[in-house]
Image (cartoon, rainbow, N blue to C red):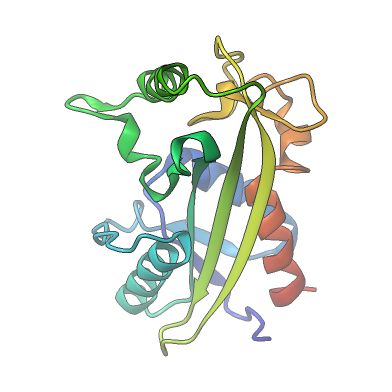
Length: 202
C-alpha cells in the first residue's frame, strides 16, 4: 500500500455536496484539500460504463493536471428492477436545460418502477468507487456499497441526490431524513472511505 505523505490532496470533483462530505471525513487526518472545481480544472469526459473506469478517468486527469495526488469518486444508484439503471448515468438522469434536478430524477425512477409493476420492496443499492491516483500514473481503488429500498413519496431534505427516496435496510428513515452524522456511519461513500483511510493513513 502507498501512503499519502503530501500536505495537499486534490478532490477531483465539481460537486459541492461531495466536497463537503470529503472535507468532514478527512479533517482528522490533517491533510489539506482542494477541489478540481476550486482549481478551475476542466471536467474530463466520463466514457466508461463502470464506476471504477470513470473514477480512474477523473483521478488521473486531476493528478496529472496538478502534479498532486488526487482522489476521485464515482457513485450511483442501481435498481435491479430497472436492469441496474441508472448506474453510472445516475447524475445524467437529473440533467435538465437549467441544471440538475434530482426531484425530477427520483420521479422518473419511481414512474419506471410503476410502469414495470416492480414488486415491493423495491430494492436498490448505492455504490461508490474511490480512486486515488498519483502523477506518476499509479492508483489505488476502494469500493463501498449500501443496500436498501426505494420509497415514495420522497422524504426529507437532508443529503443530496437520490437520498430522499433511499431507505437503507434495517432503518425507518431515508438518507434524506437521517442525521448526517448517522448517515456517515453507513453510507456507500463511508464504506469506501474507511477502506481508503485504512490503506493510506492508518
